[in-house]
Amino acid sequence: MFFQLFWTYLKIGTFTLGGGYAMLPLIQREVVDRRGWIDEEEFLNMIALAQAAPGLIAVNSAIFIGWRIGGWRGVCGAVLGAVLPSFLIILAIAMVFSEWKELPAVEAAFKGIRPAVVALIAAPLVKMAKSALKIKNSKLKIQNYLPLLVSLAAALLIWLGGVNPVWVILATIVITLCSIYLSLYHSSK
Amino acid sequence: MLYLSLFISFFKIGLFGFGGGLAILSLIQMEVEQHGWMSRQEFVDIVAVSQVTPGPIGINCATYVGYTVGGFWGSLLATFAIVLPSLMIMLSICKAYFWLGKRFRGNPYFEETLRMLRFTVLGLIASAALLLMKPETFIDAYSWVIFGAVCFFTVLPQIHKNKVTEFLSHPILLIVLAGAAGFLIYR
Image 1 (cartoon, chains in turn purple, yellow):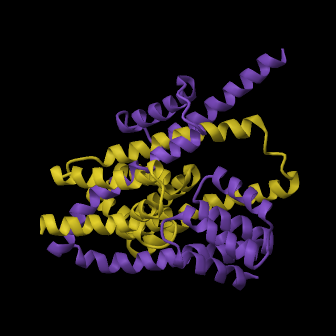
Image 2 (tube, chains in turn blue, red; image 1 turned 90 degrees about the vertical axis):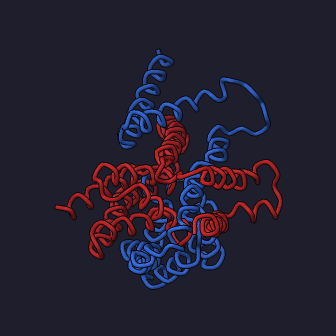
């Protein structure tokens, strides 16, 4: 089981470009369709849990499926398989790149790449905001957009206030839990 | 001492990294800046490499930052430290899940906290982008043209979805094109 899970995740980790979300359909094809280790519904539950837990989604999903299928050995196999290709490829690049970096052509290319990287961080926000707000048709009601004030406050605290994102995340969790507790307490009275 | 702070930083990143790779970048960036491990330029270059190589962006970025800070052992330690909190939390969730069944869904505390975290994560990602918009990365007007073009092609499938716009919005293609543009402009 260790080797089967290791091999499956190694394949997925080596051949997916574009991060954790791009891995999910491949994981589904291997684990649900081809091997039949878990069914469709459990896979969807797995995604919900992997996204809810902190950490990387690809790694979280490897832990869940590894545990579900092979216990401790399964977890070790799946996580090693998911992490090892990234680790080795980056290690190789890092060793070579530190020497190439001085070349004028590489430096010129990276001058063009840097603003593109910032754009690739910023631009997906549109899609993410839409899915977080659950906007289906173009209803323009102000109150539907109110939660974005939380995003704005978080961005300003970190950007201008220099607050560590860890505190912003902790504050979100504490404030949300307290406000739900209070509203449930009020409605029960 | 260096290895210890590397371990603590990446353990913290793994523990509070909600919302996937892009949100985790903002946490990595904050740790890197607070420790003065590298320049902003170097960090952006690492993010670029992480986006065009296979595997989860968070692992790629952790390995690379770890290597830059502490060589081979640094990269091994950073990668291990970012995965460790996931292992601890996800395994307890797995045990609770098989024990509780699906009762955790529909629980107002669970659902509402997750919903609010999604909005905080949007802010985190926005701040990561804003913090990187500095003279070191945006050196002249061409930088803003490249930035605008990449934003445009990334958002385009939202406005008009077809095979061509989907293809043009691929991040790896956009990074390669931006690199080619940089080579032509600045060489």
